[in-house]
Every structure is written in C-alpha cells, then in structure tokens.
Image (cartoon, rainbow, N blue to C red; front, side):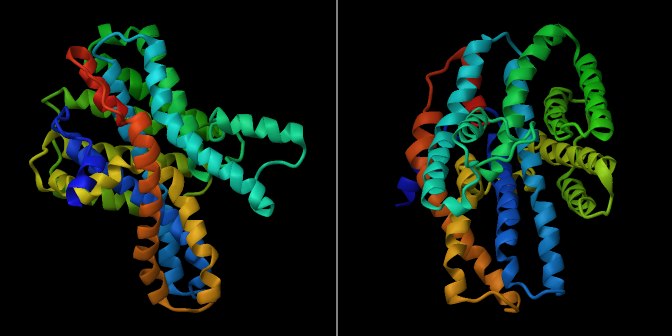
Length: 377
C-alpha cells in the first residue's frame, strides 16, 4: 500500500536540484495555510461569539491568506530560474504552462458548472444567457483576480496572477536583455520594478501581490551569489513568525496592505533562501518531511478542490451538530477531520487528472532537463 502511494505522490525521484525536497514541503505548508482560511470561514457558526477562540480563528484566517503569497514566491523563483539561463521558444514555454494549469482547472471548472445547474441558488453564473456566456468565458480564460470579476472557483483568482507572470517575464527578459546583464544589474532592475508596483498599488490600488513574484526572482539571483549571507534556521523561523504577526497589525487602507505585502515578500525570501542554500540544515529537513512533500506535490489539485470538498462536508453538519456556542472542542476536533476529507477528494483529482495530464514525465536531456522542475511550479 505504501509503495502504491509513493509511486503516485513522489515526484522528486531522480529529481534535479538539491532544493527540490524542501521546495515541495514549502508548497505543502503553503496549501495548508490556504486550507485554514476556508476552514475558519465555514466553522465560524460553531464558534461562541465574543470568545477568545473567535479572535484566534480570525487571526488564523488572516495568516492563512499568506499561503497564496508563498506560492507566488516559489513560482517566481522556478519560472525565472528556468528562463534566465538560456533562450526558449515562447510558444513552447506557454504551451507547457497551459498544460500545467488547465487540465486540473478544467476538471474542477466542469464540476462547478454542473453544480451551478444542480444548485441554482448557490450559482455565481448571472441569469441572462449573454451575461452567463461572458462570465463563463472570463473564468475560462482566468481573468478574475487581476480584473474585478468574481471567480466561479473561489481560489482561481490567483491563476490570473500566475498567467500574467508567465506571459510577462519572458518578454521582460528579452526586451531588457537580462541574460546579457550582470546579476547586480538584474537585481537592481527588479528592485526598481518592485518599488514601482508598490507605488502604483498605493496610488491606484494596483495588483500589489505581483511583488511576490519579484521576491522569487530576487531569490533566484541570490542563490547564485555566494557572498550573500545565509540566514540560519532559527532566524528564518523567527522571521516567519514576525511576518505572520505583522499581517495582524491594523494598518488601514491600500498603503497598509502594500506595507504588509512588502514585509511578507522579505519574510518568504528569507525562509526560502534558508531552505534552499543549506539543504542539510534542520529547517529544510523539516520541510522535506515526506507527508508534507506529498501534500506539496498535489498542492495544485488540493488548492483547486479543497474549498468545494469542505463546503460539501459542512453541508450536512448542522443536522448532526447545530451551530451555536459549542465550545473549542468543535473547532479543534473538526479541523483534522475536515483536512482528511479535503485530502481524499483532492488526491482523486491529482491521481486521475493532474498527474497524468500535467505532470507526466518528459524525456529531458541537457538544457531541457530544467523542464521537469518547471513543470512542478
């Protein structure tokens, strides 16, 4: 049985860089943070009002939102790292990106579409047929997120950021001739871009979370420079805790949010750098824990489907356990059970769709070997 599970969830066999294992674990950590957001949202009716537990649940909800930001950092690191060393055919690169994103997305998109007809009161699709078609096309082309469109799949807003990054970064590399530049020049260039994004976000409420991709880019540049000091595991953990606490600060407005995003981008830079540059340390070995890595390997399927699985699990709960002041045992007791439910549903999607259609191994030699790592982004 264990061997059967290992064959389906282990992606790093014969894998590339020394940082593959902790990177997989970091993905698992990121997607668990996202799980907390949706779990807290759905379990809230069972939490006593005006209780300390309610305040703790609110804090976990806020902290959980940072899981998406960590995904953006890792994606920025991997994609930039695959593109900057060598020229690539843009069409071929985007074809691989579409193959990575769309199979699992379309499977879940189809489930949501079916459920919208079965449960019309829960549907987000507009009533008039023309508006419905436009809305479905907007979601199909991953426009919600960067554009003010409500996503049909709640978490799919982040895919518009990913797709924008996939389209933009190859063009930026070519237009600014980044392969011919020094690492110091590229670092200064992307720091300037980050400042511009933060400034536009404050002034015009722009997509400030794009800064996270730049954090991943700067991480990639730092990995190749031995003179950059490596933070130890304890410092990285302390930085992570401070980053989580910073998200709870009452910083109002878009400028406050931009400041939090800037701090988080530095926090995740330190965390990932500590894990990738010293893979033998206790922190990267902790993130290399096999169950956490397997969760990371199926994190995209889990990310897309866990919210729906959670909602289905909570659907019948009021019959067995009416909402109200039920005490902390409900919150902590349901958490592992609901997590197991989401694991089961997401594992089916991973094994049936994502693994065979998006992560099927390619024969790669020489420069093409990097595609195996890029596929996992």
